[in-house]
Image (cartoon, rainbow, N blue to C red; front, side):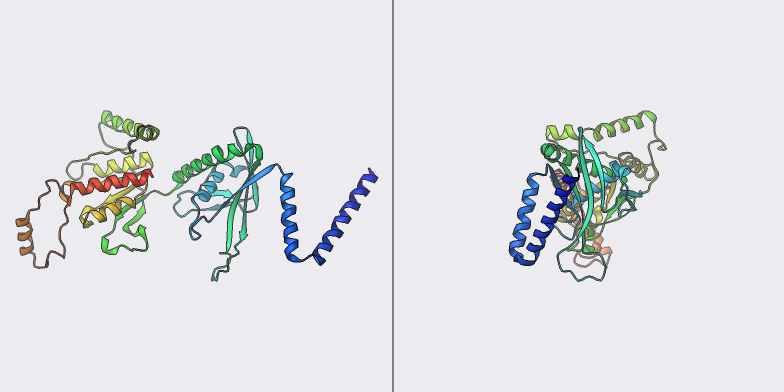
Length: 355
């Protein structure tokens, strides 16, 4: 045993001596070549592979969707096994999120396979002038696994993490109520300016909704069937959508019904005011800027759409004559969109969300 340790010590001393010689007498270019070659030789004997998920993807000023999904997944599935945690409240989240802190390691099990996750960060090589310290740090996650599980991790595990992470993000997000802005206030450099939003906190539920029990149960069953039929719609090649027509005088509970449906489905709500839309192009842009899993509410559709396709010129002329503030049909004019424009914008929305 003593002789073995003595031989090991001699070998280490020889390696240290040779490395000092390389550092002092070998040119830097050749030294880099030797370092890269040594790393390749070591990789041949390393049975583990690693995949890095960077915080910033192709667009350097926007966080990667996959990184955010991984962060949400680890906070939900693996945070209890971490030794270092951090707590934060996300921008669009309603709950406190506890996730793995930087420079920590957690393990995950998938189909009997152990997978290691490392959370870390590195300094950006780009020379950026900033008034805020620490902005040049780039966070990343590294997943490590045995090479024989490569196909399982790439083809099954990572898509599973992406789907679960997105589901956790949707579950924890703060739902919002959107309303469309007038087109004159749209910012061409910021697409989201077409909609304004506030937190959606309406307390209505089907349990508190004043409605006949049989009709209420039928609506709930229909919503549940729709919620669970995404795969069926994709299989038959149809858009995953559902439409309801609510009618009645003011105060009969139409808005409360919409709020109860949104709370039941956990969807955002878009309140589309058609009188603020000038033409079909603007209507199409509004539909495109909505998100999936949302309820689009079009109020007083019979007053805002030309169902016959004919304009009453005599009524408009009389109205313009009575109102001196209307000049050349520019100021304060009522906008009536043809029904085919609404149908076209709706189809554009379906293609956009299906992609």
